[in-house]
Length: 140
Image 1 (spheres, rainbow, N blue to C red):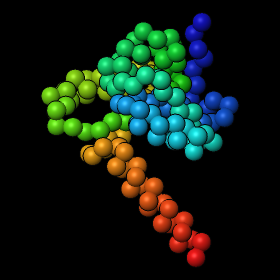
Image 2: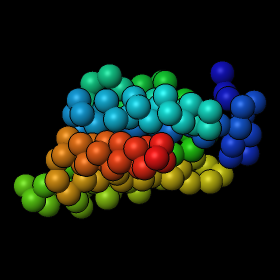
Image 3: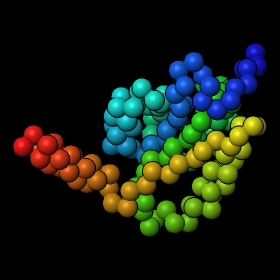
Image 4: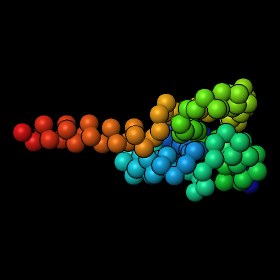
């Protein structure tokens, strides 16, 4: 059955639909936090197993939960650490990004790269300390 076409953002709730692909468990944990924190404005979904560009390409090609819903998916996020050992993978990653953008006929799907130059665990620790300090100052 073919899905009815829609204007971007025009599903009953008006929430953005975002598919996320994560490198590892820490990125998945942060994605779960974002999913809960922003549930009022976005529907954030991600596979339970980690995987990035190749996994996304495979999912949108073979999995009906992805392939058959390209007309309602607003964004695809990739959440990973940037490492020098992956420099030679960027041409292939860019090919996949361009392919994902064009999956929707009327308007391109937005692809976002959420990259950390260090490890995500360190970033999360610093982020938590910053917000604890702000909360402390607000209580004064």
